Length: 149
Image 1 (tube, rainbow, N blue to C red):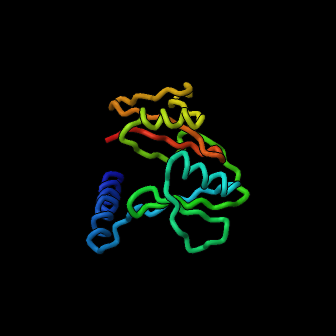
Image 2: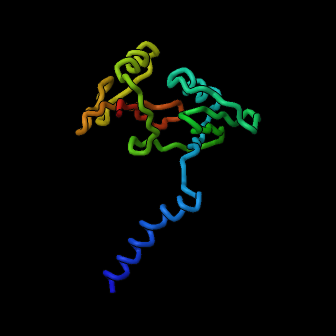
Image 3: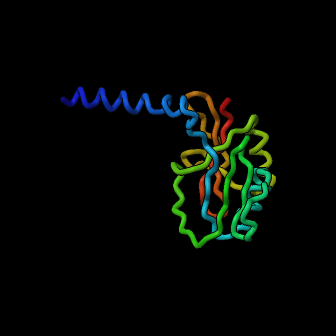
């Protein structure tokens, strides 16, 4: 009975995405939203440190900012009274062609970064050879930046 149920569940869940895709309903990532305490400080950080371009947003109300993070992908910053519990395992991740170029710029801007263990101004080298660093935005959200190809 357990094996039949498991087989049925595997069939249903592994067949689901292709059925959706065939119907034109494949899921694609659109945006991530972060609650921020100070919209101006967060927007400045993402625009100046990470060089994300700001894009117009339909609200234009002073509590929303939208930034482009890739083709048809956005990061929405929303000012609210939020409590952030920073944890490295919960993070945004961006890829760059040259991690060294980025870390040089971070150092010039006096933006601290660490490796996964917390060693200052040092990258982690993953088992697959990808180098990665971690930094925090003004609200304490962790951001990973790596050189994955």
